[in-house]
Length: 343
Image 1 (cartoon, rainbow, N blue to C red):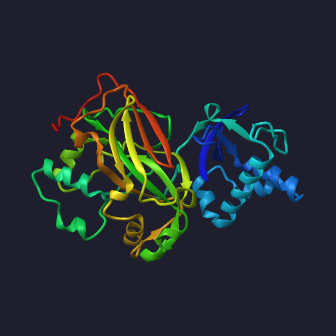
Image 2: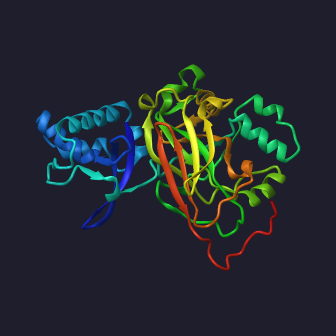
Image 3: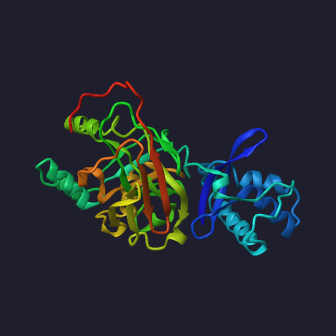
């Protein structure tokens, strides 16, 4: 399944809903709450159908994941029933509402809006090596001993198709092509051979970075912080593990204004998601909705290519089976102060 959060317009304003992307490219979005209510009413004659839907399909992905397998099973039931009943958008809900929308009729939100934590790793050796060469340094021996990560800002997430504001304090804004997993259940001291069962699914992540600021922060052996915390993009949806299949054989591409800048493969990472989960969970609890990102694939950012984003650019990240994450970079505010940091 490709689980989504989306907004629809109502007489009371825009409201968020939990949904499933349908079609080869996610051309339609199914409202899970409304669909499940009519499904149980039609197939099981269950009383209080809307109350069952209220419980199983809150308008919040983290709350949904916290319900565990029963909620995921109910989502599959609703999706399968809908696809058998109709491939159009004509079936009505129990109170006459629409169940399905064209993608251009809704706004897709970040699939996770309020994770407890966002951890971004550094797992691709080519990317690490390219950075080391720029600093005239070897790759640290410690990078090979443990999966290294920094903690990002979980409260500044953007979704697919959102315009991304150019931070006022940087001259060197960069994209980073990454793959991320979403944790599906709570766990601590998780063995590596059981770690895959803790993954709800995967999504694409663009770890936008202010490279001039990052250089100054990292020179002080701390961070990155301000260089990253202004915004991270995830989406377009959360693809469940069973639909992704082999996570270590996915093509990863980045296009700027339609031109391919980056082209890599998820299987080139040195560290696996299972190793990342086992490492983070040592004497520390992971919770449903937590985000663990792979870090940038080799040559998956402008810094490695010596090519830089410009205001007005459209950035598209595409990963096999996960979709396309597309954002336009807005013009910076005129007369905004800039840090005087040279890259």
